Image (tube, rainbow, N blue to C red):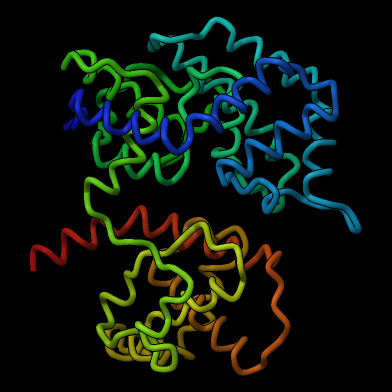
Length: 355
């Protein structure tokens, strides 16, 4: 099943994008066009910072920072130290342009895999910066599809995964994991083909705008916003509707540690564990820690992650240690919660609607 956007949907999405992001992207395209290489440290720093922060790619929170150092400096040093390799990778992309072809997509997946692997060698705990890699490559070559959890969620709603329909194989070194960049690009290419058959004129950027517009057209819940707590019960944990409170949509744009912790108590974790899981929350803590810490974080289920954040909020509340907005562990937990919600919410919603 492929739900290709209509020409009207495509035009509305592009118009909204141009209104909000067009000028920003023109600056980023121009920066990469004027400074395509990676030998000039100042130019590299400008590209890494502006692309990473404009598109909330989160690379700074993933990188391994030496004692006394700064994340940005560590990233820039790593990129400049491998400038020749990166320039060669971008050189391989020169043959790829729009309109896209399956061969071009295979090349994109290959370069993305190599670039991601190079960046991963500088990240903490082997964290894979596939989102930043796609965005950084895109602004050097607009034919590269942009990957993040929002685009992935929109694409998954439009294109059902079907391993029997693979228009191109994953090249050596490609990101061939579930919902990784290879699978993303396969779905993306199938959507491109469906649009062409339907007579809808699309580019990589216009399709990206359509994918980002899917949550609005699909009427997804509004993400949690700081300051919502009084309406949700600041001291009694949520509204009392345990399932609805549990599946309250998280917000990956939260920057303050306090706001992340306050999202944690929009569900009553004590009652949820007792009434829906049949366990005392404290009897679950060891298992939650094992499933939601370190390298296991990205594979943890949404409910586990929510309960773990609730427990961390209560631990902070009772001990009242100072909070740091640069708490990388807390930000990583919030990102994992957002990713898990994107993966699991459609299934939970369909199950609830069927009841």
